Image 1 (tube, helix red, strand yellow):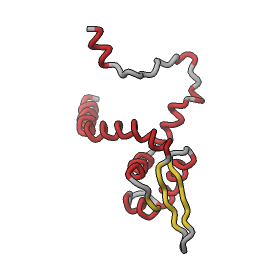
Image 2: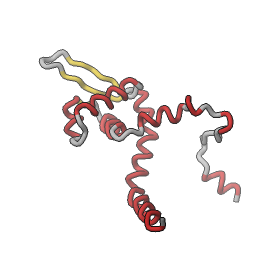
Image 3: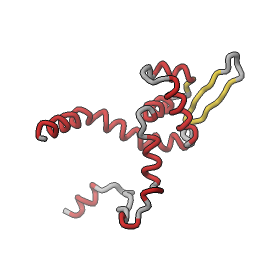
Image 4: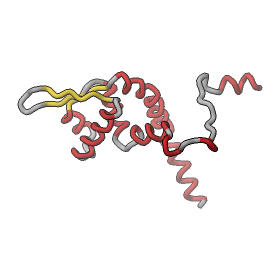
Length: 135
């Protein structure tokens, strides 16, 4: 039985946090997830994992994002080191965004979460409906 349980645990599971001594104001997990868990960040990272895109192409890919929000989200992803912004000296100047090595290392586990969400979204919606009906 314990052999079965040990096989179910991830090989590189993180140690359980010591909540009594955890610095919640300086939590690296919260800090990073706040940025990559935003409404638009995941979509943009997913697009840029395929290939570099120009600003206008990204805008067309995500039509319900405002230009201001797209600019801010791209800036946040660039600040955190996940994407690179390159300006080309054309008239008018064009800008291309691409994934950095740090962004690619993030995208590997993020793609697993994306796939899980796609596979389980219906089940989560059913659970929510069941919960709402019972409360």
